[in-house]
Amino acid sequence: MTEINPNQPETGALGIWNRHRLAIIVAVIGLVIIGWLYVAKGIAVRQAQNAVTEAQESVAAQRAEWDKQAEARQAAMVKQSLSQFGVPLAWAIRREMMGSNLDQVDQYVTDLVKLDGFEGVTVAKADGSIVVASDRRHLGAAFGSLHAERYLTAEQISAEETAPGQWLLVVPVMGLNARLGTVAVDYQVPQAPAE
Image (cartoon, rainbow, N blue to C red; front, side):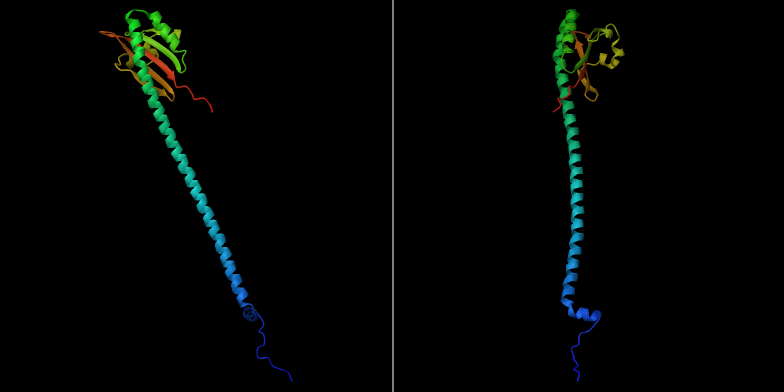
């Protein structure tokens, strides 16, 4: 007699499912978790990269703003310093021009251009003719050939940035009753030493 086993194992896909159901479910759940972690990691990495890029752009923009502010502060300080320097310069040149002592004015100009940043100085009489200049080629020339004519009639000391780091200081020299002349100083802001 042959025995009939009522719990005969099933064959095929249904048999594998019934025998290994728990292992298959655990494996599928594990694969889903691993896939989810991989995708989440990729998203997190992209978010971190975007955050770093945004932070770098923000730092670069902030640095550019600080540089712009520092340049503006430096320009304001140079302008103020040159304007304040112009007052005693006008007094000294006024005293010597009133005494017709142009040799002493020439000595002032010669010593001034020896200082760091001072590139050129011209002194013009009220009529616009240059009577003292650090560059001797300009002696006797018209002030207008070097600088704007409007400076000959300016009543206030002015310091203007003509190019980045290049300044023009114009100092009117006033006598008791009339204008004696005009002083123009070309100034180059000295570069900071390299670190």
